[in-house]
Image (cartoon, rainbow, N blue to C red; front, top):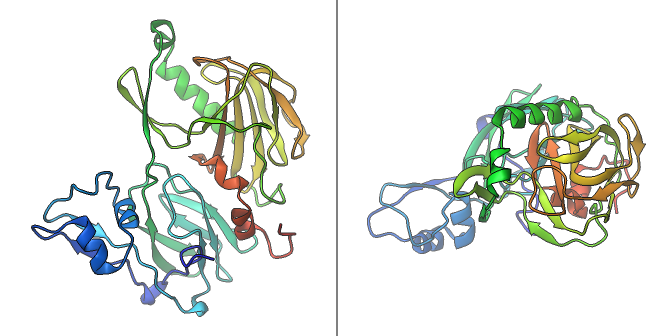
Amino acid sequence: MRRWAWLPLALGLALAAAPVHVVRPGETLYRIARTYGVPLEALAAANGIEDVNRIRAGQRLVIPSDPSWPADWGLEVASWPPVQGRPAVFRLPEGVTAVRVFGLEVPAASGRALVPVPADARPGLHPFVLEGSGLKGELLVLAGGYARENIVLSEEKNALLDREKIRAEKARLLEACGPWTPELRWNGPWRWPLDKVEETSAFGTRRSYNGRPGGWHGGVDLRAGEGTPVYAPAAGVVGLSDELYVRGNAVVLRHGRGVCSGYYHLSRRLVEPGQEVARGDLLGYVGATGLVTGPHLHWEVRLLGQTTDPAVFTRPGFWRALAPAAAGRP
C-alpha cells in the first residue's frame, strides 16, 4: 500500500496544516520540490500549476505533506490527498455525525462519510469540521490535471442551448436523485455500464463550446453504436426515466448515501420510476437523443448533487474504504 493511500489528519488543537512556501526571486518549482522532498508532479498538482516552468516571486505554494499521525486521533481519509472531482471516504471517530466541508454538510453512516470533492474546488487547504466532536482540521486537495477540449456545435444545435431549459433540467435531475439516505444499496465495486469500454471524453475535462468557455464535463462519454445495451453498474432504484431537453432519453438511479447515476442520450428506456434494479440489469440502449453530435453513452454520477468521477466507483480500493466492517469485501 502506498504511504498516501491512507492518511489520518490532525484534529482540534493538534492541527498541523500543510506547510506553505513563499517563492523567492530566482527559485524554480523543481528546486522547491527537491528542498521539501516531494515529487514535482505532486507539488504542481497541489497548487493547480499547469506549466511547471512558470511560477512567480511572492507566490504562495502549498507543500503536500505525508506525515505519520498518531493512530489514536481515529480519523482516516481515503484516498490521500483528495483530488478535484473524486470522492473521499472519511472513516470517522466514534460520535461524529457529519463532516462539514466545501460548504456542504455530509451525514455519516456506519462510521463513514462519503464526501464529494467538487471538480472546481481550489487546489490547496480547505477547512473541515467533524460535527458531534468539535474537532477541526484542514483537507489538502490536489488539482485533477484535467484536459481541455472545444466542442464544435452546428448553428442548429448551438441555437438550442437555452439557459432556462438547461437550468430547469438540472433542477429536475437533482430532484430525481432524491435526498441523502443512510442505506448503501450496493455491495462491491461497480461495473461499467457498457460491456466494451472506450472513453471518448473523460470526466472533468474543461470544455468550451464553439470557442466559448462552458465549465467542465460532468460525466464520462463512452463510444458505442446505436442500440448497444446499457446495464446498471450497481443496485439501485429508478428515480427518473423520461426524455429530457439536453440529455435526451434519460435514466437516473438512486444508490443511497447521496449517490445517484445517470445514463443519457439513450435510444430506448426499459425501466420505470420506482423500479428496483440489480447490478447488470438492462436499463436501455445507446442512442443519439438530446443535444449530441452522434450516438454515445454519457454516464454521470452525482454525490450530494455534485458531479463526481464515475470511474472511482468501479475500483475495489474505493469499495474497501467505504464498505461497512460487516460487509463482504472483494
